[in-house]
Image (cartoon, rainbow, N blue to C red; front, side, top):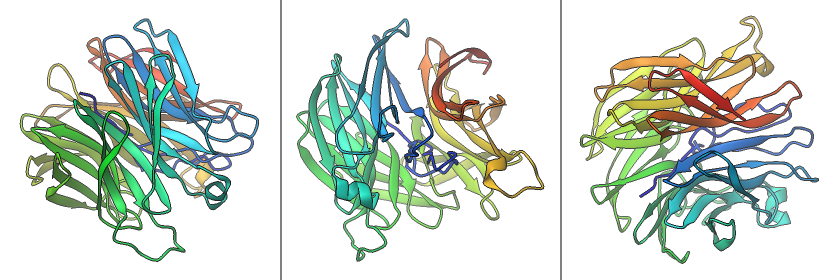
Length: 402
């Protein structure tokens, strides 16, 4: 089985100069780029690996119209690129989640299908199945309300469980049929069922996990409320809980260990200040406890994993002001962070990446006893490029690949 977010997790909007804005979700942790005419970007939103390949998904704008295009890349065990494909359908698009299914890859995200959607700045949820040569086996879109996207995928023997969002625009009349979405497809791409939860204006599921024959989906509802929902495998809601208060993205990543659920996100203080957070729940969605990492700035954990020694390793982002006397957005400095905790949520170590350029961490996977973190970084020419950072189990940087 394979999870994903977007997994989420955190979502980045490029506007003029590329200001960080968590959306996904997605995510929302998952990471979302909004097109700009003059800025080149190439970002990774999610990472997955198996015994043969690494696969990443995201988007770039390397085309004459500078549209954002969903991108999938695969690498062999020597980290040599074996394929790269752009999803050249419609207008803007991005992938937020990915997973392996035997000899194929499932990517999920969103896209603008036609010129009307492009002009209205709305998208459809998108799921695409590729073979290892990059050929499309099937492609399906999804839209309950005007603005829809898929954020993560979990692959089982009988199909694909996908999370995301379908919400209405401000000009639409309210509906009970939208909000955070959980859907299931069979292996041929047929939609079997869909479920919604929460506000049809803002709710979103950023990530999901299937364990003990149940589905756990996490995200946000509205007013900075994090949500965890438990479903059976047919999509029937069994229990739920919410958390007050988080940031706009809410809960963005989820893992399970020792009959406990651990969720990544942000704890919101006064105003927009947040601290990175991991929250522990039991399998009935009952709150147990949390751990918060504080720093000078706005900070959150986007994704997390359990390593081979049963430690929780979480990655996220920190933003601080370069000049405390200025209140303009262009004085913000962005860094990636990585933290390690035991299963009792005792902090082992938290490290800031801290290069001079802006760095964003979006996903993490175990890699031969170490940790492989993906994301993207800014450069002097104003571009944003994908990045791979290899950490030891002691959170020391072993190497960086662009």
